[in-house]
Structure formats: C-alpha cells, structure tokens
Length: 99
Image 1 (cartoon, rainbow, N blue to C red):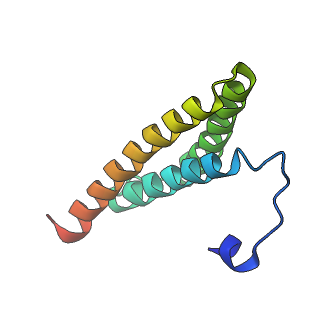
Image 2 (image 1 turned 90 degrees about the vertical axis):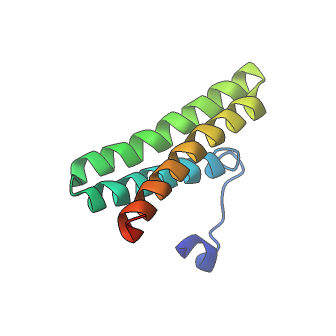
C-alpha cells in the first residue's frame, strides 16, 4: 500500500525480481494471518518465513535468468505461491465465516 502511494524508484537490476518477491511476501502474510486465526501464530516463524520466501523466490528467478529460462521459472513461482495464497485465503474465509 505504501509503495502505491509513495511510488519509490526501483533500480533496473531489481525490477525482474520485485513482482516475484511481492507474491512471495503475500504468501507469508496470508500464512501468518491464517496462523493467527488458528491460534498458532509465532512471530519468529512469520519473520523467517517472510524473509526466506522472498529470498528463495528471488534466487529461483535469478537462477532461471542465468539458465535462460527466467520466464518459465517466474511463472512456476507465481503459480506455486498463488496456489498457497488461495489455499490460505480459503482457510481464512472458512474461519471468519464459519463456512
């Protein structure tokens, strides 16, 4: 949200990795929200999950770029994190609406 309001300048070197890092971070946020609703949230686990998701996703895309298959690996990362985000969103919905 802050990024949309402030519109920071993103270096060209980081541009290919930023969307993947955002999706990875969203996965950690939804997972943390789900854990909080389930009563098993641990802040240390959330921070480690958040940082490791972002770093691993960026490394996968970096490796894909070096191997010449960056677009395919980026798509794979987005699909995997997308599935996890929707799974967590469904669990959150079931918890909130009891349905």
